[in-house]
Every structure is written in C-alpha cells, then in structure tokens.
Length: 229
Image (cartoon, rainbow, N blue to C red; front, side):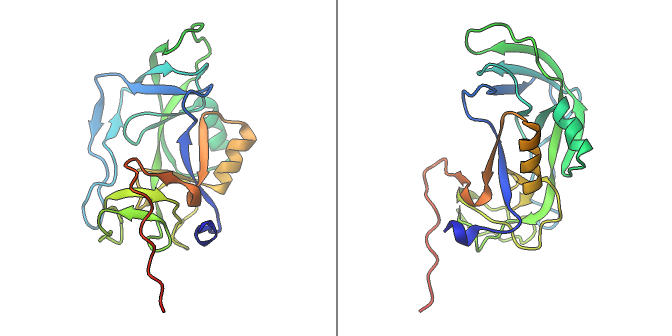
C-alpha cells in the first residue's frame, strides 16, 4: 500500500517531538487571550481554521523534559518557533510561515524535579499558511464519516487517517502549509525536512504522509475499494 501512496515530491507531517523526550514542553496561552474568527472556505463557507491569536502573545511553559526545543505547539493553529529557527527560515528563503510575532514567556516551570531552567530560547508565534495542495481523496487511506462534498476545502469529518497523499499538480511550492482536506495537520516539503536536519532543530517529528496514522477512536482504515472484474 505504501508504494501506491508514494508520490514525488515527498511530503511529511510535522508534529512536536515524542512525549517525555528531552525537549518535551507544553506551551499554554496566558489569559486574557485575544482572538478573532478563523478562516472559512471561500466556496462553501464552512470553517477551515481555528480562531486567530491576537496580541499580546503571552505563554507559560511547562517542561516535561530537560529543556525547551526549537518548535512548540499550543492551542488552536498557533505554533511557536525559536528565534534561531526563525532566522534560519528567513535566511534559507523557505516559504509558508506567517506572523513571526515576538512572544513573552511569563513563567517556566518543571513538571518533574530538576534544576530551574535558565536557557529558554526567545520564541515567536507563527502559523502555517493554508496551501493550495489538496489531499487526493481517491488515493489516500482516510476514513470519512461522510464523503467530502466541497471540492475546494474537502473538509468533511475525518474518522481516521492511515496514510495520505496530495493531488498531483496542486502543490504550489510552500515548504510548510495546511493542505486542503486536512487543515488540522501541518505538512512540510522535502526541502523543509533537509533544512531541519541540516540545522539540527529540536522537538520536531517528521512522518512521511504515506506513513502517517491518526486513529484516536480505533476506527481502522477505510474499507478496501471494490476491484473491477
């Protein structure tokens, strides 16, 4: 099945590092949090993005591991990246991140015993753009609770993901983006994967899209498509 889903160029799903790893950190927004409505599909009008975070950008960090990494996830569609990541991203002319708003880390605490952390990076709040790349519904192993009806956002309820691929010709060169059909996931290019490896950025887990599994309710993969006689 992997061979059927493989595509060129290759793409990866970006997630934070493993639980309880050296760089495992929770980033929580500090109240009061200002927000505005998120993006809607331009064709059907259904919501495709979470509410947008507005200034002031203030967070609390909870360290489960030993130190804080270059990439953190917080609530909604908002991401945090270290200053060194942001600098390299711009210098290498990668595309797809928006915002780059300085973040005020108001407090840092450890979940487990250990010395008080002293070397906390400066963080910036970013978001991955909504890309034009679209999930290839026919070639992906996605279980829907009902088939997508809007050919723009393709955002019907997804019960499980057991590997997916993007529609050939729909990607427009972004290095990090949210694809049409899976706006809740951050997808990156092969160039982004090489960028992460070259700079040694921490707390980033990259899974090839054809190997990505998300099945919180253990629904399993979609039923096999009938074959013609």
